[in-house]
Length: 278
Ligand SMILES: [Zn+2]
Image (spheres, rainbow, N blue to C red):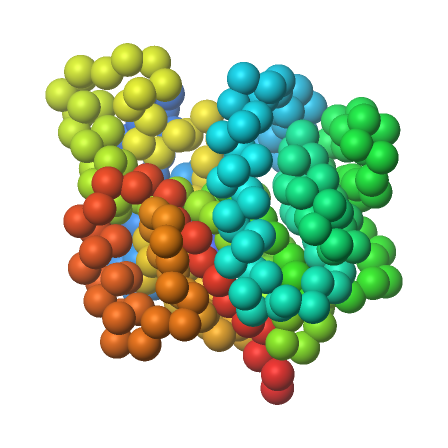
């Protein structure tokens, strides 16, 4: 099995040839950065074959952190509900153990999940009694359209985020809400982990700056906003932490993204966007 694809000479996001090697992880994975759109990405990336093998055993027993996951995911959904109080159809891409699907169903949503590995999807679907689609997402024939699409810590894993966002756009109703949770690669905690990694002071699972076991893309508020706006979404809010004001003034959002997101410790961010009506 080839672990890696061929190296890319252009940015997969904006096609610029101005990409350069930015970092190399301990496992040998190379991180490139685009001078034009600033996205960081693994280059070369893992092969499809390697990723299929990796994700065939990816869904783990999360019962020990179940309470924490349910609390966090309920909060994400509650933010969506402030914008979509009528609770229509919801698709979760990367539905894992099905916690969000179950929460959404209990709160009145018509929820559907998706998981790339069909065996894993089947097991979870049988356990929670809900529909979970499986296989390569961009190749599925889905006839429904959705009011809401959610991806919780998925977009950084995708081999082809550009194709995914086109597919997601086509599956969403006009004015639909897209919610994405993802790591913030320039957060204080991420930079602290990088410093530990560079100083060789680290413990397993503590210093995982790029998480190159499975993360292929490394976003900041700037790069995820650019990406979504370029593909037909209006970004409503990018936040980290809790107590989020969905309706804050655009100037407050700007300061949050430019300044506070770099000061606070949170390693993850949430992005709420709306599909353009045009
Ligand atoms: Zn680029």
